Image (cartoon, rainbow over all chains, first blue to last red):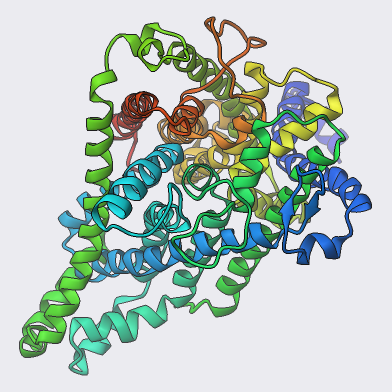
Length: 310
Length: 301
């Protein structure tokens, strides 16, 4: 059929798609960059697992996970990670104790009560808290909160370090994370719900707490879970303020070394590639990675499972 | 915008309809508690900035910029750390921004969303953004071990770790700005005969540049304040020379602050505070630049 028309009309320009090697190369380049993100994840897994396997060939998994004495550099070395986990649990719990009420309070205020102008000023100011380097928070925790507020002003019975000062400052650090995501979730609740609630005679407090808050719960829980994962993985604050002695922490005023605190401190020493000390670092890193990964997956699952779609 | 104003009207309606309930002690008390939550955070922020400034006031002088670390706090300065931070962040920017933008272009403009690989990349980028920073240090440490690089204290090694840390942030920001470019722009370009690649390079990407710049600067400011991954890569050293190249030894501001804070002498704590103030000023400048670019160049479609 094309041959028939070609004979009767003047030759038409060739409109078929021309091969464009440049196009293909550029697209390959873009695809390569996207694939690189997968390579990073695989790299993390390999980098953590290979030394960890060597570590667990020398130290039984049970002894690592359930042992209660952490002394990797002592002559009678012991590799029970429980002390590090208790310190991490304390700092994380203290951080959440402060961050959840303060973050949610800020979110409810900004979403349900603040005027647009107030909100436009408050939100970036709160975000500043998220932009302060963690090492500056660490300095503040150990030099001001612990040394001046806790010891000089409040006369608390505590040493130079405590999980309370580290956890408290970390809690303030994650306020913006919790506030910002919860506020987005609450702002996304449709106004018809607020109107319905108001029509039934509810006050704004009742509407915020009994209608908007439950409707936005999946987003709020996701925000809290993200806060947990940041608190567990935070390194510099706990390395400076929580203490360097690995021992089971029994109270908030005690010092203790967290998982990340151990990693930061072990990094300062010089350990040969392949030595048990070097591999210990990666075993703790792998545990940290697995814990944060599980937390992130729980967050994704919660959002999917409990999302209220309007 | 429209929704927000609607909410305002709803609130005024509620105020009119239930005035008695709104001014009950319970309601007022609740509002006061919410205010206190915000006030607490703001007071904390103010106290942090003011005390750091007061602590460091005596050492905020030229010595901070001209001197090298020393055993006597009076003679010590942060010159190599300041230059090291600039070298590492500059290298990080050169490594991350092209890669992040390219990855985002692929995900937003070319990838088939429903393909399994695209979905994995998508979830993976989200997950990478939530991995603790210190893990990126371990990844780089392990990679250097495999590559047989024994001297890890080199500018490019530190920059590599920070690049991987902020790559997901740059990708997410770039995707958002590409998504904000209306599809009419793309369709117009395609309709006059441009190829998809030409459309991206000549129309979509230039329109998204302000958003990409803002997002990248914010990501870099996060890298500038980060110490944990570099600590693992031997970033804590005492330099008596200026870092001067990609393979040069380095230390950075946050690491210097960490080291000075953990020393027992009070003189070093003053130095740590002074360096913190300097770091905060640098971050503030970067954030101001990001906001400036956003307000000045960002198009509203």
